[in-house]
Length: 433
Image (cartoon, rainbow, N blue to C red; front, side, top):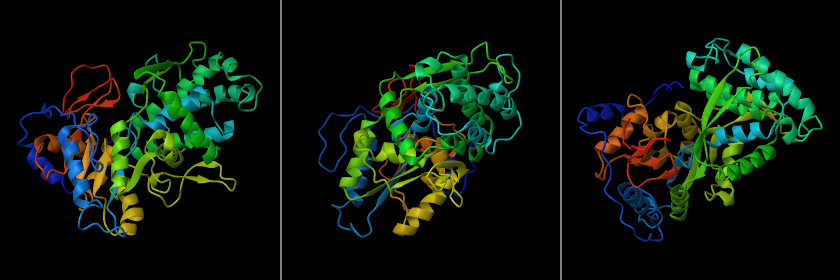
């Protein structure tokens, strides 16, 4: 996906000047000592030790045990969700579960509207060409998806048919449908800008109610935690090439809840901070995974800013972005925080956590923010978040640093006690790309 416009990134000039002095891209933190956590401090877990120290000091400095704490005007914190609060992306995981189990509420006609919503007719990037090397577009692949969905819709007992899931899964239409929808998600994200790509996957909830989406989320999280952390590949069956031809798609599977982040949410709340989530995933999905006690984060349901869709009079979701609302990605995260939080509190968040270009605006745009936690995913060094990550390496150990870089091993889905990131399938870890 394209990097969104970098709006109001005040620290960016500072970032560029400091980066010129950066001599090493492999800096890591010293080993973390094992110790018990005090009531208002983070458990050691797999935290990078300096990051843990800085967060503990922030809690002590402005939390409810501090001299200046005012319960009528509490500090608040904002977390991204996907690949920050959890390992991997709950929206993408929900899409896989939705596809594998055919959990759809749309008729074929409604699904066509959702699939085509705001997608240009131009061909997808060459990396998304079919197996024969031919370009694919929304106009060639949507008819294939609908042909298979109509067959599934009239045969599967969970839609309008009579056959159990196990039986329809044996049809080539099933594999063609799930593969081409997941391929389309990837191709749209690779080809078009974030404003076009990010809402698209949420439109696939068309025809469903909030309760259905929330149950889908519960089922997704429980299922994902039984799956190995691995790369999965789907390909369309040879007997159903359709108009678009044969295509394949790969993605990372094995979403994990993150114990260190669960603890961090709890420590902030216990210390008198208000905890908010600002996510580019669909609001009903984020409300369920973040507030359900079974998942360990226990955010108030009302404390979620996320992608919003219109609903009909019966509460069914429509494939139409909610009018008058910003997309909660890139600059839209900043605008949403300003609209709903700064207007409420009178000041900005004291702490922000994120992992991607979609978070970099909110990381930089609020003068009240004292600490920014970046979950290291080796972001592009030319992007703002890549430069913020470099600042975290450059300023490691300095108490006035704004940016903290937290390492992770994508082979396990777990934090590591350093700034280093290990990609899935790799053994070498490093701090910066």
